[in-house]
Structure formats: structure tokens, C-alpha cells
Image 1 (cartoon, rainbow, N blue to C red):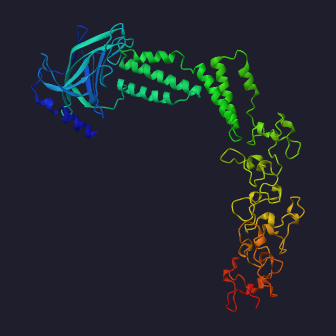
Image 2 (image 1 turned 90 degrees about the vertical axis):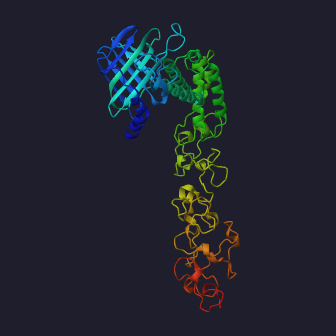
Image 3 (image 1 turned 90 degrees about the horizontal axis):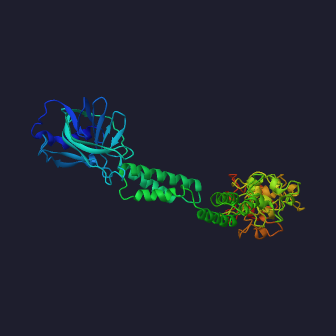
Length: 522
């Protein structure tokens, strides 16, 4: 605030250097429509933005002069008043040219303002006016100047004329910041409303109507505060009001076509949204165009945008045989049709959980067998039914029912004999070391304390152990052999992993040759 006051003092410092004004008492008066008007009380303030407000009242009527620093220019009086030949700061109060303005509130509380635009039947051009501040000094606390203006009422049909106005030694102090909505503000608000209106899509009729109404309101305010001498604003308003800010029938038809195209191209992930959008566009088409033969309503009635069991699969995608009858599609045979079944494949994992979409919006098929997971009894294709796979054995973040290598040993589960009778139940799974953990869940299949993954079970890394290392050349690959070098000593008894981390990189090597004891038959 102190900085602004300093600027004002500098700006008006030269006003106090001229010859003395000829008034000997404070005063605020003017000629109002040919009659003397004189204020009985008056005050002037400057706010934090440098806006000067001078107010005078006779107890019945009030004159207010508002001068924005943006409008200030140095001027010299050229009349025969006491201000003749003195420099000062002038502020135009022309509507549509500035921020500054002047008002008079009369005995009937009618506001006459330079911001009000004259009706063109009365006057084509806006009235003129000027505030001329001759001296302003916050140190002495006094301000002096003169003014004249023509102001109109809100209808623009009537005006008052204030001339030969002056204020002399009016008390001048700092005051609160007042936010005035000016012509410039109105123009900026209109520009912002126009941007919003241009950016709104006719596909959203409600948003279009709102943006249009906001733009219309902004134009009306601009016309009130700035005038419309060429009729350009009124022409725009007439165009907008012609359709009451509603989209046209042609636009509604175009929207329906856009909705139809999106509906036809919809996939499972966005079908409900696209179907509902299409329904909405058709409904608006009826609203704005009518539906004389009922064909549009018939199209709406034929659409099913629902997902009755809320599993993420729209009803129309649960009609697997495409016969239009949802009731005869029952994937798991539980007598509960898929469109009403929360677990379509009855694997105890809900459809909503198993329904994950790829980048194209199609449901994920983990094992690539052509059956999406939410309809697949064996999601990862490892031979074990999903219902029989719980947990995440190897803690790799992939649950066993989606993990092709449940124990993370490098051998695909399906190649670890998880289900000998192929019924999807792993109760008969092979358990080589007899530790009650079937091989497909056992990180050390032969129980020799060396993790399977470190026994080179799949050199070519294709998940198939047909190339697994078999050091001693017997019938068992090392990862299933409890005596890898066939020396009669069990591998576990040859100290293959002293630090117990399952990795034989620290295995005992008694004779110091190239082979650790558990692989050294001599």
C-alpha cells in the first residue's frame, strides 16, 4: 500500500506547484441540467490499486466520480475557470473507451451513469465526460479538480447533464479497494464466454445450452456497459436467440449418426457407455426434430444397454450363441444364465475379477486358448482348474491360477505332472521327493536342498524340461535326481549348499577339482 501512495504523490506532486485556487472553503458543486447542485458533504479516497473515488451528496442526491489510473493523461485546462492554464490529470468517462466513470443517484434512487448506453432512438453516440484532477496530496489530505459528464438511466431513454462541476479541498485519504465492473471487464468476460461457447460440443446439448446462455448474458452486459453503436452485438444476440440457445434439428441428427457410429464400433469395455450415448442422442433427436412415425423410439426400445448382473459384461455380450435369448447361455451349467451369473465359469473367481481388458477393449485370455479368462475353467492352461489354484506360490505377484509356472522354478506347471488323470484336480500330482508338496508347487523337486532352478532344468528356457541337465546320464534329470553324480551318496549329504540359500555356488569341493562333491563321482 505504501508503494502505491508514493506513486500517487509523485504523480500529483506538480499539481501543488501552480497558483493558488480562488476558493477559500472546501466545496463540491456542479450545474445539473441548468440548475446549481451543491454537496453538503464530500470525501475522496484512493485504494490500493490507485483508483480515486470522489463522492459528494446534498443529502438527497449523490454524485460519484471514479478515476482509474489506467485512463490518466496529462491535460491543460483551456477555459476561463479558476483552473485555466493549469496542468492536471484527466480521466475520460466515455462508455466503451475506458474504466473510469461517473454517476448520479437521484432522489428517486435512479442511477444515472456514464456506463449506461443511450438508446439509439435518443442518441446514436455515447455521451462525453471528463474528470480533471488538478491537485491531490495525501500528506495534506486534500484533493481538487473539476468534472463534467452526460449520464443515462438504465433504459438509455433519458439522460442528465452535469457541467461546470468542481471539487475544491475535498478531504482525501486512503480507502478500501472497491471492485468496479467496467466496460473493459465486460468485454473480457464476453471474450472468455465466447471461447467457452466455441469449445463446447453440440454432442452435449445441455452443456451447449449453458455455454450459449452464458455467452448471451455476457453480450447483453457488454452492450449495457459499452454500447452497441453499429448493432453488431444485437445481431449476434438475435442469431443466438433465434433458436433459444438450443441445438438445431440438423445438429441433433448429426449427433445421432455420431452416436450410431460409436455404438457399432463399441467393444465389451465401452459398450454400455456407447449404447447409453446413442440412446441419449436419439432421445434428443426426438426432442428437437420430432418422431412422427415412431421409428426413432422403436430404435431406442430395441437397444439393451444393461449389464444385469453387474459383472462388467454387457447383456448382449453374454448371448454367446447370438440367438437373442439370454436365458439359454449358461457356460458353467449351473442353471443360472450367464447374464445373471456373477461367476460365469464357476471357478470361484468372480467374473468381475477375471474380466480384464486389453488395449483394444477385449477381455484378456491368459493362456491364449481362445476362451477369455472369465469363461475359462483353466485360465492359465496349466492343466489345473482355476478353482483348484489358490494363492501365489512363488510370490511373483501373479496368482497361481494365472501363473504358468506356479513355483517359479523355470519349468512350466503343465510339464511338472500336476494332474495325472487330467481331470483338473491336482490331488494326484507327482511329488518326487515325497515332502507332500507336489512338484509343480515345489521349488526343490527332488529334496536335495538345491533349488530346482539352479539344477539347470531348462537350458533353452522354453519352459519344457526335455533338455534338462542329467549329469550322471541315468534316467532322471538332476532336478529330479537325489543323487546327481550317481556315486551312491545322496546329493543332500554332499554338502551342496553350506549357506542354505538353495544356490550351490558355495557347494563343498573336497578334492579341489572343477566339480563340487555333489557332482563328482570320484
